[in-house]
Length: 252
Image 1 (cartoon, rainbow, N blue to C red):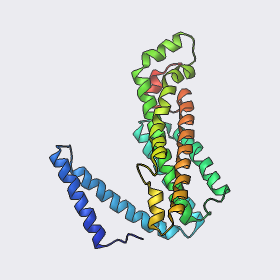
Image 2: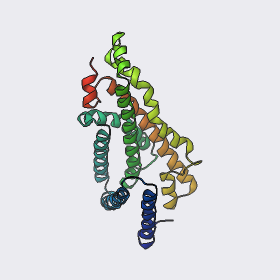
Image 3: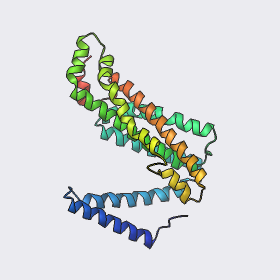
Image 4: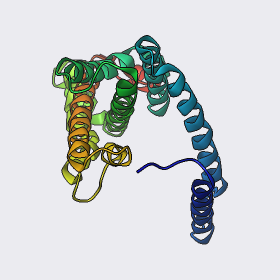
């Protein structure tokens, strides 16, 4: 089974967009037009992505370059979301520490072949979820450091180092950032049928193949997000991965 671009897809998308805007209006939600803008961006971006992938997927070197460009966009996106654009090298380090080992395991075990058409979707999914895990971990950590600054100061007054004092505030927030990823794994096949599963089925694969692909992706996401969050926590404790306001307030 495949979904081909054409009138049926255009009709379905148009109806769904009209439904979304109508619910925004009826529910008195702000900026209903933002849904149209988001959908327009998605159509353009996915259309361009389809053309680019078609052009580069047959060449491994070009596919790797495309994945590197996607990773750069992921880093730029996360540092903007967490308000720490000046810490982009450390965000890159945290995300690389989470993503590279997972990709290495997938390739070394020959789970997927080293071809562009295989690497682009799998690594792309992993990179996007690594970005989300990094964003959640940092936002929760930064919010905790702002809200609980007196606790940080108290820890310093007791003789703890800056890294230890930051850890006292931040450490319990890191597991919260991992909850969405864990829930995604726990509920797979029970509450939801995630994207890789559906993709394999739509591509003509068997249910068993779809399940194997989805388990690989979900466990890879969990490993990448966990590693990224732990590395980010360490970098935050060393005052390397911080927004400017916290860098100034977290005196040693």
